[in-house]
Length: 413
Image (cartoon, rainbow, N blue to C red; front, side, top):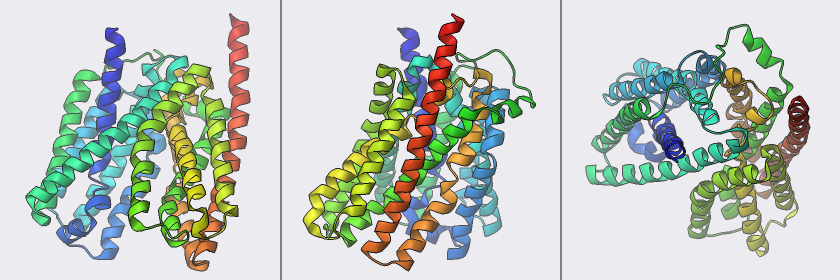
Protein backbone atom coordinates (compact mmCIF):
# COMPACT_ATOMS: atom_id res chain seq x y z
CA UNK A 1 0.00 0.00 0.00
CA UNK A 2 2.87 2.36 0.87
CA UNK A 3 4.44 1.85 -2.53
CA UNK A 4 1.06 2.47 -4.19
CA UNK A 5 0.61 5.76 -2.31
CA UNK A 6 4.18 6.81 -3.05
CA UNK A 7 3.85 6.43 -6.81
CA UNK A 8 0.70 8.55 -6.82
CA UNK A 9 2.63 11.17 -4.84
CA UNK A 10 5.33 11.01 -7.51
CA UNK A 11 2.65 11.56 -10.18
CA UNK A 12 1.35 14.57 -8.26
CA UNK A 13 4.85 16.06 -8.07
CA UNK A 14 5.33 15.45 -11.81
CA UNK A 15 1.98 17.12 -12.56
CA UNK A 16 2.95 20.12 -10.42
CA UNK A 17 6.32 20.28 -12.11
CA UNK A 18 4.85 19.98 -15.61
CA UNK A 19 2.77 23.08 -14.94
CA UNK A 20 5.65 24.96 -13.30
CA UNK A 21 8.20 24.27 -16.03
CA UNK A 22 5.95 25.77 -18.74
CA UNK A 23 4.27 28.49 -16.66
CA UNK A 24 6.91 31.16 -17.27
CA UNK A 25 7.54 30.62 -21.02
CA UNK A 26 3.78 30.69 -21.74
CA UNK A 27 2.88 33.47 -19.28
CA UNK A 28 1.77 35.64 -22.20
CA UNK A 29 -1.20 33.35 -22.84
CA UNK A 30 -2.83 34.66 -19.67
CA UNK A 31 -1.27 38.10 -19.17
CA UNK A 32 -0.44 39.14 -22.73
CA UNK A 33 -1.04 42.90 -22.63
CA UNK A 34 0.60 43.59 -19.28
CA UNK A 35 3.56 41.32 -20.00
CA UNK A 36 4.03 43.00 -23.39
CA UNK A 37 4.13 46.37 -21.64
CA UNK A 38 6.57 45.08 -19.02
CA UNK A 39 9.16 43.53 -21.35
CA UNK A 40 9.56 46.71 -23.40
CA UNK A 41 9.88 44.95 -26.76
CA UNK A 42 8.36 45.56 -30.18
CA UNK A 43 5.66 43.17 -31.42
CA UNK A 44 8.17 41.46 -33.69
CA UNK A 45 10.70 41.04 -30.88
CA UNK A 46 8.02 39.79 -28.48
CA UNK A 47 6.97 37.13 -30.99
CA UNK A 48 10.61 36.25 -31.69
CA UNK A 49 11.24 35.29 -28.06
CA UNK A 50 8.56 32.60 -28.15
CA UNK A 51 9.78 31.48 -31.58
CA UNK A 52 13.25 30.99 -30.07
CA UNK A 53 11.66 28.89 -27.35
CA UNK A 54 9.82 26.78 -29.91
CA UNK A 55 12.86 26.19 -32.11
CA UNK A 56 15.17 25.12 -29.27
CA UNK A 57 12.42 22.94 -27.80
CA UNK A 58 11.99 21.07 -31.07
CA UNK A 59 15.74 20.59 -31.58
CA UNK A 60 16.35 19.13 -28.12
CA UNK A 61 13.51 16.59 -27.87
CA UNK A 62 15.67 13.74 -29.23
CA UNK A 63 18.83 14.57 -27.21
CA UNK A 64 16.62 14.87 -24.13
CA UNK A 65 15.37 11.33 -24.64
CA UNK A 66 18.92 10.01 -24.83
CA UNK A 67 19.89 11.93 -21.66
CA UNK A 68 16.87 10.51 -19.80
CA UNK A 69 18.15 7.00 -20.53
CA UNK A 70 21.77 7.89 -19.77
CA UNK A 71 21.39 9.79 -16.48
CA UNK A 72 19.20 9.84 -13.37
CA UNK A 73 15.75 11.28 -14.21
CA UNK A 74 15.50 12.63 -10.66
CA UNK A 75 18.68 14.69 -11.07
CA UNK A 76 17.58 15.87 -14.53
CA UNK A 77 14.16 16.97 -13.29
CA UNK A 78 15.60 18.72 -10.24
CA UNK A 79 18.08 20.59 -12.42
CA UNK A 80 15.33 21.54 -14.89
CA UNK A 81 13.15 23.08 -12.18
CA UNK A 82 16.01 24.93 -10.47
CA UNK A 83 17.45 26.27 -13.74
CA UNK A 84 14.03 27.39 -14.99
CA UNK A 85 13.44 29.23 -11.71
CA UNK A 86 16.83 30.97 -11.83
CA UNK A 87 16.23 32.07 -15.42
CA UNK A 88 12.83 33.32 -14.26
CA UNK A 89 14.47 35.54 -11.66
CA UNK A 90 16.64 37.00 -14.42
CA UNK A 91 13.54 37.45 -16.59
CA UNK A 92 11.73 39.27 -13.74
CA UNK A 93 14.18 42.17 -14.21
CA UNK A 94 12.88 42.43 -17.82
CA UNK A 95 16.32 42.80 -19.44
CA UNK A 96 16.95 43.75 -23.06
CA UNK A 97 15.90 41.86 -26.18
CA UNK A 98 19.11 39.81 -26.56
CA UNK A 99 18.94 38.72 -22.91
CA UNK A 100 15.30 37.71 -23.29
CA UNK A 101 16.16 35.71 -26.42
CA UNK A 102 18.83 33.88 -24.40
CA UNK A 103 16.36 33.23 -21.54
CA UNK A 104 13.65 31.83 -23.83
CA UNK A 105 16.17 29.73 -25.77
CA UNK A 106 17.51 28.23 -22.54
CA UNK A 107 13.96 27.62 -21.29
CA UNK A 108 13.32 25.67 -24.50
CA UNK A 109 16.48 23.60 -24.10
CA UNK A 110 15.79 22.87 -20.43
CA UNK A 111 12.14 21.98 -21.01
CA UNK A 112 12.90 19.29 -23.58
CA UNK A 113 16.52 18.24 -22.96
CA UNK A 114 16.17 17.86 -19.20
CA UNK A 115 12.46 17.71 -18.35
CA UNK A 116 10.08 16.23 -20.93
CA UNK A 117 11.50 12.77 -21.63
CA UNK A 118 12.68 12.40 -18.02
CA UNK A 119 9.13 13.07 -16.78
CA UNK A 120 7.62 10.51 -19.16
CA UNK A 121 10.33 7.95 -18.41
CA UNK A 122 9.55 8.22 -14.68
CA UNK A 123 5.82 7.85 -15.45
CA UNK A 124 6.54 4.77 -17.55
CA UNK A 125 8.50 3.24 -14.68
CA UNK A 126 5.77 3.80 -12.09
CA UNK A 127 3.51 1.04 -13.38
CA UNK A 128 3.67 -2.42 -14.87
CA UNK A 129 2.85 -3.08 -18.50
CA UNK A 130 -0.81 -3.50 -17.51
CA UNK A 131 -0.90 -0.10 -15.73
CA UNK A 132 0.62 2.21 -18.34
CA UNK A 133 -2.72 3.68 -19.43
CA UNK A 134 -3.64 4.49 -15.83
CA UNK A 135 -0.28 6.12 -15.03
CA UNK A 136 -0.17 8.30 -18.13
CA UNK A 137 -3.88 9.13 -17.87
CA UNK A 138 -3.53 10.23 -14.25
CA UNK A 139 -0.54 12.38 -15.17
CA UNK A 140 -2.56 14.16 -17.86
CA UNK A 141 -5.54 14.62 -15.56
CA UNK A 142 -3.29 15.82 -12.76
CA UNK A 143 -1.66 18.37 -15.04
CA UNK A 144 -5.10 19.69 -15.92
CA UNK A 145 -6.18 20.05 -12.29
CA UNK A 146 -2.92 21.68 -11.18
CA UNK A 147 -2.96 24.00 -14.20
CA UNK A 148 -6.40 25.35 -13.34
CA UNK A 149 -5.52 25.81 -9.66
CA UNK A 150 -2.25 27.62 -10.45
CA UNK A 151 -3.94 29.79 -13.10
CA UNK A 152 -6.68 30.96 -10.75
CA UNK A 153 -4.21 31.56 -7.92
CA UNK A 154 -2.06 33.62 -10.31
CA UNK A 155 -5.10 35.63 -11.44
CA UNK A 156 -6.08 36.28 -7.81
CA UNK A 157 -2.67 37.63 -6.84
CA UNK A 158 -2.44 39.56 -10.11
CA UNK A 159 -5.64 41.40 -9.22
CA UNK A 160 -4.44 42.00 -5.65
CA UNK A 161 -1.03 43.28 -6.76
CA UNK A 162 -2.69 45.52 -9.31
CA UNK A 163 -3.14 44.78 -12.99
CA UNK A 164 0.12 46.58 -13.76
CA UNK A 165 3.76 45.84 -14.55
CA UNK A 166 4.33 45.40 -10.81
CA UNK A 167 1.56 42.81 -10.76
CA UNK A 168 2.99 40.75 -13.60
CA UNK A 169 6.45 40.98 -12.01
CA UNK A 170 4.97 39.41 -8.89
CA UNK A 171 3.47 36.63 -11.01
CA UNK A 172 6.86 35.93 -12.62
CA UNK A 173 8.48 35.67 -9.19
CA UNK A 174 5.62 33.41 -8.08
CA UNK A 175 6.37 31.17 -11.08
CA UNK A 176 10.01 31.02 -9.99
CA UNK A 177 8.96 29.95 -6.50
CA UNK A 178 6.79 27.23 -8.05
CA UNK A 179 9.82 25.93 -9.97
CA UNK A 180 12.01 25.93 -6.86
CA UNK A 181 9.27 24.06 -4.99
CA UNK A 182 9.21 21.52 -7.83
CA UNK A 183 12.98 21.07 -7.51
CA UNK A 184 12.80 20.38 -3.76
CA UNK A 185 9.82 18.02 -4.01
CA UNK A 186 11.38 16.13 -6.91
CA UNK A 187 14.64 15.59 -5.05
CA UNK A 188 12.89 14.14 -2.00
CA UNK A 189 9.94 12.33 -3.63
CA UNK A 190 11.14 10.98 -6.98
CA UNK A 191 13.53 8.02 -6.51
CA UNK A 192 16.64 7.61 -8.64
CA UNK A 193 15.56 4.23 -10.02
CA UNK A 194 11.96 3.29 -10.81
CA UNK A 195 11.23 -0.16 -12.21
CA UNK A 196 13.72 0.29 -15.00
CA UNK A 197 16.30 -1.85 -16.73
CA UNK A 198 19.75 -1.92 -15.20
CA UNK A 199 21.29 -1.87 -18.69
CA UNK A 200 22.91 1.48 -19.43
CA UNK A 201 22.25 2.95 -22.85
CA UNK A 202 25.15 3.40 -25.25
CA UNK A 203 25.12 5.91 -28.09
CA UNK A 204 24.96 3.04 -30.60
CA UNK A 205 21.63 2.03 -29.01
CA UNK A 206 20.01 5.12 -30.56
CA UNK A 207 20.18 3.24 -33.85
CA UNK A 208 18.22 0.39 -32.30
CA UNK A 209 15.42 2.81 -31.40
CA UNK A 210 15.31 4.20 -34.93
CA UNK A 211 14.94 0.65 -36.28
CA UNK A 212 11.87 -0.13 -34.14
CA UNK A 213 8.72 0.12 -36.33
CA UNK A 214 6.57 0.76 -33.24
CA UNK A 215 8.45 3.99 -32.48
CA UNK A 216 7.62 5.43 -35.90
CA UNK A 217 4.00 4.28 -35.72
CA UNK A 218 3.54 5.85 -32.27
CA UNK A 219 5.13 9.05 -33.63
CA UNK A 220 2.52 9.14 -36.42
CA UNK A 221 -0.24 8.57 -33.85
CA UNK A 222 1.00 11.45 -31.67
CA UNK A 223 1.44 13.72 -34.71
CA UNK A 224 -2.10 12.95 -35.91
CA UNK A 225 -3.63 13.45 -32.48
CA UNK A 226 -1.69 16.66 -31.82
CA UNK A 227 -2.60 18.10 -35.24
CA UNK A 228 -6.27 17.52 -34.49
CA UNK A 229 -5.85 18.91 -30.96
CA UNK A 230 -4.37 22.19 -32.24
CA UNK A 231 -7.16 22.42 -34.79
CA UNK A 232 -9.73 22.00 -32.02
CA UNK A 233 -8.88 25.48 -30.68
CA UNK A 234 -10.84 26.84 -33.65
CA UNK A 235 -14.07 25.21 -32.50
CA UNK A 236 -14.91 28.16 -30.24
CA UNK A 237 -14.77 30.82 -33.00
CA UNK A 238 -16.62 28.37 -35.28
CA UNK A 239 -19.46 28.27 -32.77
CA UNK A 240 -19.71 32.06 -32.54
CA UNK A 241 -18.94 33.12 -36.11
CA UNK A 242 -20.72 30.37 -38.05
CA UNK A 243 -23.43 28.97 -35.77
CA UNK A 244 -24.26 32.26 -34.06
CA UNK A 245 -23.72 31.02 -30.50
CA UNK A 246 -23.49 33.89 -28.01
CA UNK A 247 -20.11 34.72 -26.50
CA UNK A 248 -21.41 33.77 -23.04
CA UNK A 249 -22.61 30.31 -24.09
CA UNK A 250 -19.49 29.77 -26.18
CA UNK A 251 -17.34 30.71 -23.18
CA UNK A 252 -19.22 28.25 -20.96
CA UNK A 253 -18.75 25.48 -23.53
CA UNK A 254 -15.04 26.34 -23.79
CA UNK A 255 -14.64 26.04 -20.01
CA UNK A 256 -16.29 22.61 -20.00
CA UNK A 257 -14.15 21.56 -22.97
CA UNK A 258 -10.83 22.87 -21.66
CA UNK A 259 -11.17 22.11 -17.95
CA UNK A 260 -13.82 19.51 -17.09
CA UNK A 261 -13.13 17.20 -20.02
CA UNK A 262 -9.36 17.44 -19.62
CA UNK A 263 -9.67 16.48 -15.93
CA UNK A 264 -11.87 13.52 -16.76
CA UNK A 265 -10.62 12.47 -20.20
CA UNK A 266 -7.04 11.44 -19.44
CA UNK A 267 -7.68 9.31 -16.34
CA UNK A 268 -10.84 7.79 -17.82
CA UNK A 269 -9.06 6.75 -21.02
CA UNK A 270 -6.20 5.33 -18.97
CA UNK A 271 -8.37 3.28 -16.62
CA UNK A 272 -10.45 1.90 -19.51
CA UNK A 273 -7.27 0.96 -21.39
CA UNK A 274 -5.90 -0.92 -18.38
CA UNK A 275 -9.26 -2.56 -17.69
CA UNK A 276 -9.56 -4.07 -21.17
CA UNK A 277 -5.81 -4.67 -21.38
CA UNK A 278 -5.05 -2.64 -24.51
CA UNK A 279 -4.02 1.01 -24.76
CA UNK A 280 -3.79 0.82 -28.54
CA UNK A 281 -7.40 -0.38 -28.84
CA UNK A 282 -8.64 2.62 -26.84
CA UNK A 283 -6.56 4.93 -29.05
CA UNK A 284 -8.17 3.36 -32.14
CA UNK A 285 -11.66 3.90 -30.70
CA UNK A 286 -10.81 7.52 -29.86
CA UNK A 287 -9.62 8.19 -33.41
CA UNK A 288 -12.82 6.68 -34.85
CA UNK A 289 -14.97 8.90 -32.59
CA UNK A 290 -12.92 11.95 -33.59
CA UNK A 291 -13.24 11.11 -37.29
CA UNK A 292 -17.01 10.66 -37.04
CA UNK A 293 -17.39 13.94 -35.13
CA UNK A 294 -15.31 15.84 -37.69
CA UNK A 295 -17.26 14.28 -40.56
CA UNK A 296 -20.37 15.57 -38.80
CA UNK A 297 -18.93 19.10 -38.67
CA UNK A 298 -18.10 18.92 -42.38
CA UNK A 299 -21.66 18.01 -43.44
CA UNK A 300 -23.56 20.16 -40.93
CA UNK A 301 -25.38 23.20 -42.36
CA UNK A 302 -23.77 26.52 -41.44
CA UNK A 303 -26.58 28.01 -39.35
CA UNK A 304 -27.90 28.11 -35.79
CA UNK A 305 -30.51 25.38 -36.37
CA UNK A 306 -27.86 22.71 -35.78
CA UNK A 307 -26.32 24.32 -32.70
CA UNK A 308 -27.26 21.51 -30.28
CA UNK A 309 -25.99 18.84 -32.66
CA UNK A 310 -22.72 20.76 -33.00
CA UNK A 311 -22.36 21.03 -29.22
CA UNK A 312 -22.88 17.26 -28.80
CA UNK A 313 -20.35 16.53 -31.57
CA UNK A 314 -17.84 18.89 -29.97
CA UNK A 315 -18.20 17.27 -26.55
CA UNK A 316 -17.74 13.76 -28.02
CA UNK A 317 -14.76 15.01 -29.99
CA UNK A 318 -13.14 16.59 -26.91
CA UNK A 319 -13.73 13.57 -24.66
CA UNK A 320 -11.94 11.42 -27.23
CA UNK A 321 -9.08 13.87 -27.83
CA UNK A 322 -8.34 14.33 -24.12
CA UNK A 323 -8.63 10.60 -23.43
CA UNK A 324 -6.09 9.95 -26.18
CA UNK A 325 -3.73 12.77 -25.17
CA UNK A 326 -3.49 11.18 -21.76
CA UNK A 327 -2.34 7.80 -23.07
CA UNK A 328 -0.65 8.24 -26.44
CA UNK A 329 2.81 7.64 -24.95
CA UNK A 330 1.64 4.55 -23.03
CA UNK A 331 2.03 2.16 -26.04
CA UNK A 332 5.82 2.60 -25.78
CA UNK A 333 5.72 -0.10 -23.11
CA UNK A 334 3.26 -2.57 -24.61
CA UNK A 335 4.86 -2.34 -28.05
CA UNK A 336 8.04 -3.89 -26.66
CA UNK A 337 10.47 -0.94 -26.41
CA UNK A 338 13.22 -2.02 -23.95
CA UNK A 339 13.13 -0.19 -20.60
CA UNK A 340 16.63 1.22 -21.02
CA UNK A 341 15.58 2.82 -24.34
CA UNK A 342 12.25 4.32 -23.23
CA UNK A 343 13.60 7.86 -22.86
CA UNK A 344 15.28 7.80 -26.26
CA UNK A 345 12.12 6.42 -27.87
CA UNK A 346 10.02 9.18 -26.28
CA UNK A 347 12.50 11.79 -27.52
CA UNK A 348 12.29 10.53 -31.11
CA UNK A 349 8.50 10.29 -30.93
CA UNK A 350 8.25 13.82 -29.52
CA UNK A 351 10.33 15.38 -32.31
CA UNK A 352 7.91 14.03 -34.90
CA UNK A 353 4.74 14.04 -32.80
CA UNK A 354 4.90 17.69 -31.78
CA UNK A 355 5.93 18.99 -35.20
CA UNK A 356 2.35 20.27 -35.74
CA UNK A 357 3.40 23.23 -33.56
CA UNK A 358 5.33 24.35 -36.64
CA UNK A 359 2.61 24.06 -39.28
CA UNK A 360 -0.91 23.52 -37.93
CA UNK A 361 -1.75 27.08 -36.87
CA UNK A 362 -0.25 28.38 -40.12
CA UNK A 363 -2.45 25.98 -42.11
CA UNK A 364 -5.55 27.04 -40.18
CA UNK A 365 -4.74 30.74 -40.55
CA UNK A 366 -4.16 30.41 -44.29
CA UNK A 367 -7.48 28.62 -44.75
CA UNK A 368 -9.32 31.29 -42.76
CA UNK A 369 -7.76 34.06 -44.86
CA UNK A 370 -8.29 32.31 -48.20
CA UNK A 371 -11.87 31.18 -47.44
CA UNK A 372 -13.54 33.60 -45.01
CA UNK A 373 -16.51 32.42 -42.97
CA UNK A 374 -17.99 28.92 -42.86
CA UNK A 375 -16.05 27.60 -45.87
CA UNK A 376 -12.68 28.15 -44.18
CA UNK A 377 -13.80 26.16 -41.13
CA UNK A 378 -15.13 23.36 -43.35
CA UNK A 379 -11.76 23.03 -45.06
CA UNK A 380 -9.99 23.05 -41.68
CA UNK A 381 -12.28 20.25 -40.47
CA UNK A 382 -11.44 18.27 -43.61
CA UNK A 383 -7.71 18.65 -42.87
CA UNK A 384 -8.32 17.51 -39.29
CA UNK A 385 -10.44 14.60 -40.56
CA UNK A 386 -7.56 13.52 -42.81
CA UNK A 387 -5.20 13.47 -39.82
CA UNK A 388 -7.71 11.47 -37.78
CA UNK A 389 -7.96 8.88 -40.56
CA UNK A 390 -4.15 8.62 -40.72
CA UNK A 391 -4.12 8.18 -36.94
CA UNK A 392 -6.80 5.50 -37.12
CA UNK A 393 -4.82 3.49 -39.67
CA UNK A 394 -1.61 3.91 -37.64
CA UNK A 395 -3.34 2.75 -34.46
CA UNK A 396 -4.64 -0.38 -36.21
CA UNK A 397 -1.10 -1.15 -37.42
CA UNK A 398 0.27 -0.61 -33.90
CA UNK A 399 -2.43 -2.86 -32.50
CA UNK A 400 -1.13 -5.62 -34.77
CA UNK A 401 2.44 -5.05 -33.55
CA UNK A 402 1.30 -5.19 -29.91
CA UNK A 403 -0.63 -8.43 -30.46
CA UNK A 404 2.45 -9.94 -32.09
CA UNK A 405 4.54 -8.90 -29.07
CA UNK A 406 2.04 -10.46 -26.67
CA UNK A 407 1.98 -13.73 -28.63
CA UNK A 408 5.78 -13.85 -28.62
CA UNK A 409 5.87 -13.34 -24.84
CA UNK A 410 3.22 -16.02 -24.30
CA UNK A 411 5.14 -18.52 -26.44
CA UNK A 412 8.38 -17.69 -24.60
CA UNK A 413 6.74 -18.66 -21.31
